Image (cartoon, rainbow, N blue to C red; front, top):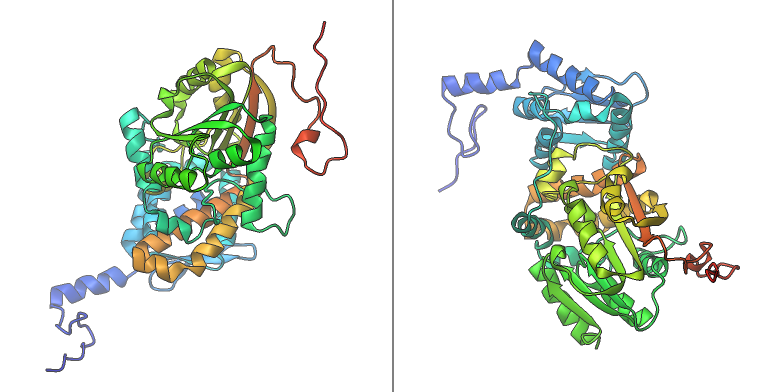
Length: 437
C-alpha cells in the first residue's frame, strides 16, 4: 500500500492538522513586535557586530551599519527566547539543534561577534535573564573524574579522526608557517622540554597526561623517567599500551589518579592543558602539590588556556563541552605560585599558535564529518563545529590566551640567562649565571 501524499497543512506522515493545531502553527510563523524587540536586544548585547540578524519568516531585524560578514537566522521563537534568557547557553544549544543558523564562514562570523563583545563588555552578554553570570562546576575529586569522563572518554576512535597522528590534544607550536600539524605538535613538545631543561636521568612528574604522548616524548628524546597522572581511564589504558609497544614502560609510569595524590621528589613538574580543569578554588591545592614534589633545583611549567582579565566562563562551553572548565587570568594563576614563594622565570603567550592549531583540527573534523555523523548525530556535529570554530575565533580575537609559565624556587640560580636554549637554530649558546660567591 502506497503512503498518502502529505497535504498542504499536513504532518510528515500525511495526517491533517486540526484547526487549533493549524492556528498554532501559523501563529508560530508570525513575527510579533516583541520578537523584533528581543532580536534587537540580542544585537545590542553583542555590541552591534557586523552580522545581520534575521527571524524565521526571513525578515532581517538587525542590519549592520558596516559591511556584514554573515548572518544569524533564528529558525523559531524558542531559539530566540532561549538566547535572550541565557545568551551563550541558549545560542549554543540552538545552533547545535539547527534552530540557529550561521550564514557565512563560521570562524569569521564568531571572530567579529567576539571582537564586538569585547568592546561592549563581554560580561553583559554572559548574564542570564536574572542578571546572573555563569559559574564553573566545582572540581572536587569526584566531580573532576565525572567532568573528565564527559569530554575525554568519548572514544579514542573519535579523536583519531581529527587530531594529529600521536593524539596530542593541546596547542601546537608552529616554528614555520608551513609546518604540518604533526610537525607543530612535535615542536611544541620539544619547546616544553627545553623550557624545563630536561637531561638524561631526571625524574619528571606530569599532571594531566592525555593519551601519554608528551610523557613518552620526554622519555624517548630526553632520557628522563616520568610519572604521568590522569583520571581518564580510557586515556591511561591507551597510554600504557603505547608505552609497552615502544619499549618505554620501564621509563614511563602512567597512573590513573588525581593530581592531588602526586607524591615523590622530581626534577621537573610539567602540566600541559590541565589547569583549565582545576578551577581557582583549587589553585592553592595545586601549588601545595608542586611545593612538596619539586626539588630545590627543579623547574616547573604550566601550559594553560587563560584570559586577559578574570571573566566568567562561557556557559555553553562549560556545560556542554568542558564541564568544570575555567581559563584563568595571569593574576589568578599567581594563587598557585605566590603562597609558596615560587619565582616566575618565563611567560610566553601562544594564542595565535592555538588559533592555527584549532583551524587545523576543524579542517580535519570537517573532512571526516560524515564518519562523525554516523558515530553520533547531526546535533553532535554542529556542537563540535561550534566548539572548534568558536575557540579558534576566540584566540584570534584575543578573547582567550594560551600561557606557558615557567617557575622555580627563589635560590635556583643555575638557569639560562637568555632564551637561546629554546630555539634549535639559535646562533647563541645558552649560558647560565655563575652563582659562585
